Amino acid sequence: MSIDAASLRASSAAAQPRGRGGRSTLASIGLHGALSAASLIAVFPVFWVVVVSFKPDAKAIEATPSLFNDSSLDNYTDVLTGAKGSFLAWFGNSVLIAALTTVLGVLLAATTAYALSRFRFPGRHWLLLSFLVVQMFPFAVLIVPLYNILLTLGLQGSALGLVLVYCSTAIPFCTFMLKGYFDGIPADIDEAGRVDGLSPLGVFWRLVLPLARPGLAVTGFYSFIVAWSEVAFASAFLSAADESKTLAVGLQVFVQQNRAEWGHLAAASVLVAIPAVIVFYAVQRFLVSGLAAGSVKG
Figure 1 (cartoon, rainbow, N blue to C red):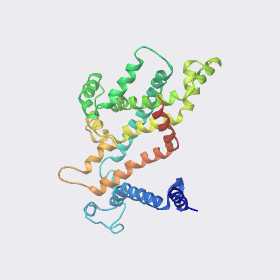
Figure 2: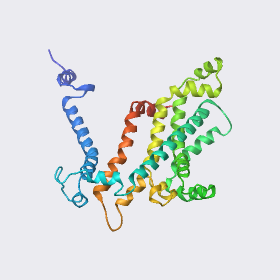
Figure 3: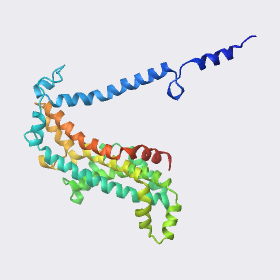
């Protein structure tokens, strides 16, 4: 009895060991190896910054500094005690600006996105288009017009002026994300709330917002990162006084034209990253679902 070639290929393929997802063992090994290599490449610069943060400035620029020799906490002590820069003042400024930007940006974006999702009014599509167009412009080209606006309003050099600038750049993206999420919440919930006697604001605050927590987490995290790590706007719109700087701007004092304190810069960079990591882990369980929902509905 003869066996055709197709049957032989099918039986040979069935005999090959398979990993998860129907991949062969060899393919799984190659995939995991590539992912491991990519992870090491991504993590190594962060690891090296942490290593350098424990080294004296003179040792930090060596081609192959040792991991444990000459390591100490002196850089962290100098940064935190104010011997090198006004780190605690910068930290307070950054926390204040980032918190105000997050709260104000999410609040304005949520109300705008809810109106765009639930109501039909003249100019609605043009408003959405304007948000999209704003995202296409490099933020650097906005420095001069924004500077003139803040100067006219008397807010140039103040933390409030910088918060408004950050909100103007974060709100368009946050509005698009939240609109997509609100579109996925059934409008029947709004109707049920109004039947129960809730006002439109009550429906929004008590029914819709609790259901939109993943979307709010995404936009809140984005607004926080925009305000926490941005440099160009903070350099242009804040006072030049050392105590008025944010962390991202203050780090520049460690690298100047005639000297570079790499060990202290690395230590300050590690301290700056800690709040962002904490915020990320606080909202990470919402990020995937919020990003997915906001990107596919609209």
